[in-house]
Length: 273
DNA sequence: TTGTCGATATTCT
DNA sequence: GAATATCGACAAA
Image (tube, rainbow, N blue to C red):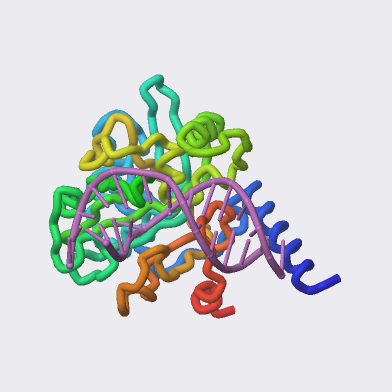
């Protein structure tokens, strides 16, 4: 049997395992991730994970978003994004891939050079503010403002957890062309614009507050002490932004089948087996 | 499995 | 007029 074929089978098996039990294959947490400690270690009266302004018990509050873009991008991994539709349907997905955009000095950011326009105004608003914009004339991307002027985090992929059939419908309706083929689960949210379609997120969400909004919020993913390893890789689709093109500002759960783009070279560098 | 290409609107030059 | 933080169809291998 050719080696490539065998590797392919092994890879598929590993993915299947992850799909069935995403947390069992987890490795020990990185010491670089202080924001991911269990809530119990943060003291009883004021946990950043359970501040709950509007009655959602596990809702993450403003304190969670008030950290610099890189730690926030890492802290997003494993948390659960919840979208409540007008009819009450709740769509849920665990965040598995993000990108950090650092602000004026970041040549790949919309806020590079301190540019502030009508489009990117929400990048400069308080941490937790959504920055939703139209890309390539037909798709949306969803970002969350972080600490730091003009800094934010792009959400790139989710592991769908609930409301999958509604997501499939939304994706099919919004997709152009042949609307026949049934989308696989992994095709629902494995990309920044795909997750916006699946969760019915459009421009009307721009400038809303993820810590306060009624139609969408973030919940603690309760991943516990065992978490998947996090890969730091170059960002996707930013063209040539000089030295900023290669910087490892994209973060994803290693081995997750829900990630949009896998970077094998970065994984070698990161894990040092 | 990989590469190429068109769609399409807003922003910036 | 060019570029763009994308996606999906299709062809080739």
